[in-house]
Length: 251
Image (tube, rainbow, N blue to C red):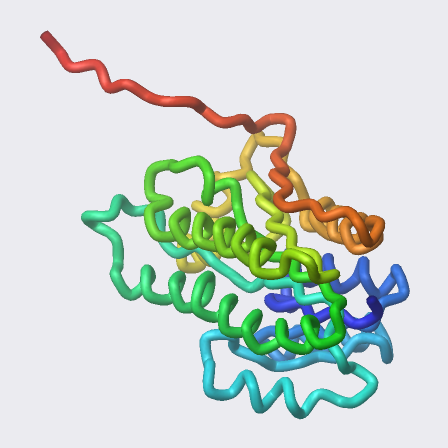
């Protein structure tokens, strides 16, 4: 496996994954909406990195863009579905429905469409790896996670069903489920650019980093051919499932 496509490559997990895979000797296609950040990354990473301006919510354009990839960046051996976001932390009855639509279009529709486009060539070659970046929010509910958590639960189940569909083929599928992670734009995006709110999420906390996720992927793509890691839940040592909560009613 020599060529990886990483979505959401312009920041956070995506940037760290691109850097690590380039350092490991892979060719990497870094896809994202922000061309300026991709070009900056290309200057840093050199000729084995191909910047690809791509919005995974624009379904009509994706197939055309993929068909125009240079020959030396085909075929795609590793698909890393990293692009995704959370918007808002309001309860469902107060949430902005437009935010819900953006999360669904990005975290679910964009991910499955891109996977559907790339998977057939992997099946034809009987070789490939699909790595989805899910979240612990897909397993453990928390207040305000509503559609974000549901979208990541979809990614978790989609990954498991891909494994079932691909049984008997030499194609791996892994869902990575990070917990509290700092050093990204995740919370800034969630709070619509409010840096103060975003900083408060990580204040006085130990958190995992984008480099932790990148190193995990570096390990995954080098596991033996017979071994598949179905899902991998990663939390900082400061975090654990909180358990059930009971509201005490006054007598």
